[in-house]
Length: 310
Image (cartoon, rainbow, N blue to C red; front, side, top):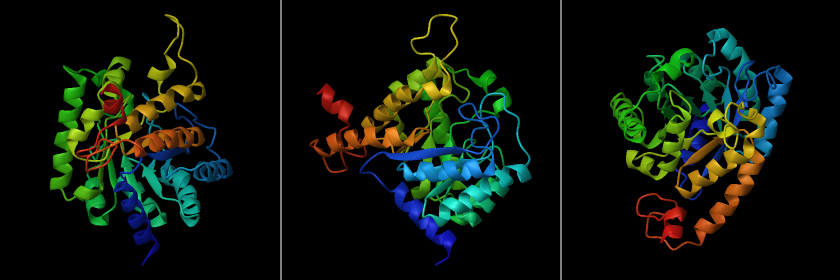
């Protein structure tokens, strides 16, 4: 078995995980990401940070070389590859399950060859027409996010009649297109795309409706970590949001909400705290009575939130 095949198998096993909510740790190898752009941009710093995220207990390490913050410029393909490939190779050699955070098929293909086992595409295959055929051929897990446009103009597209219904409908339509194009149904993960073409009110409406995302019929990834809508909590009118690194407590609360709703995975910057907090949720869930299907809101199971309401 090749290293690429082994990586894909390990990743597929994680996609099938239903006993607990997994933790995906973020490694941004960028000069301009909203949370930690530039901090891990130098090669040695990026490698060290990737190892720290793995050691902290991340189930998946998500490596990205392009910032997707609102208004961000795009690097060249060559620059994106230069940023991510050394980190992916290093983590793969250490036995990590690695996801490549990219919208480009060329970058995804090189990352899979380097040892990544998952493609995490915030555009859901809409940014690059070659992405979906690549994923279908490779037979690897694919994370498709709800997406309306590139970072430069995403906020102009934040208009909804009913954000929960609209996001579920649009994401469901994209799911159908991906499956028709050959993406493996058992390896498709969906992401509601908090902060992407969404206002703070939109984000909170989606957070309040997390259990409804199960109706899409696929594992769900939540990416709320350090986002601006969390930084605005408890700030006075006109006061700027707290800096990203000061939003980890709020992020942890969203991760608990995700676990209580039975979501598959949370994507976070502070891995160590998230792992510890979610271990508490998992311990409680393991002691809840449930019907066949599990205790985490998968088919037939009760969520912890439902148990508390009852």
